Length: 397
Image (cartoon, rainbow, N blue to C red; front, side, top):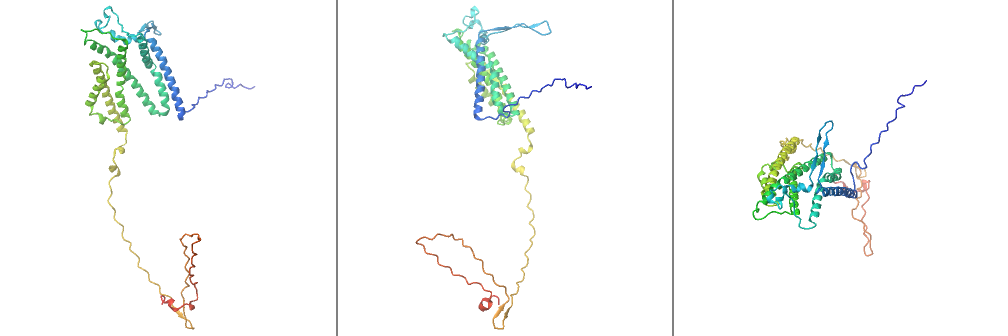
């Protein structure tokens, strides 16, 4: 009788294979880069188009949400009503005293339209800008998806932090511009209220407020630009710590040129806000330079003369070894006299000299050239000293 295996009856769980990336290293050719850029641009423009449609609808439509019940409680939140985009942008103008607006005595708050297509074009303009803002997370993500394959992990974290701070600064600038508009309009309309009454057109008013919002939002990115230069090593705290007065003066001049209109409130508000943000950027540069100096090794700050060390004193020259005395010259060999009267030396036979190769290049004879003359042959060496004259042995004697 066999016992059944309890594990055999269990169903086997198949592990789902992890999908492998097609190109994990992000290596692409130029054509693939262009195709990827076209794909990301198409997605970004599609998102902006959808946001523009929503902004076009939101320009005149207000909606209400709620009441929303809170889970596990008997209370609820709401109802919450949201004004239309046109009413939100028109609210600073409607906040003016009634005597400063055309038709303000009756309680109405409307802007003028001087052409048949002005209202439609104005709605399209405001809807396009609203769509650009509403779809900003989508098209910013498309830019990030196109750039991120060429970045390392540290660069990705830095880019995300910079993008997050840039978005917050732009929103702060836009909110400040919206708050300043009401004060600026009231100042501008009080200048000649005794001689005329204001009747603003929709294109002029919305153009003024949208330009102010965009200018404030973009101007608030200047301190972030200084921080980026410091992180890149271009600007240091030592370069800008003593130039605060010049920086403040330049910020006021920049605000005077960038703010629309001639009223001083928006200019002062922008200049003061930029001064505070610039001071925060300078303090960030100070902390970042201190951290960088603490992590930097000491030998990188030493110049070449100090890094090479002191030159040692020259050492003593070694003692002179001297030259060996010359050896004695051997005595010449004796020459004997044969019974026949001729001298016979006991010296070794003289070897014949080795022929020396000529380095002159060989030339081919031509028709007009003469044949080379034969060289005289040297007498063959002989080992019979009896046939040689006695004068050949003078150096021996």
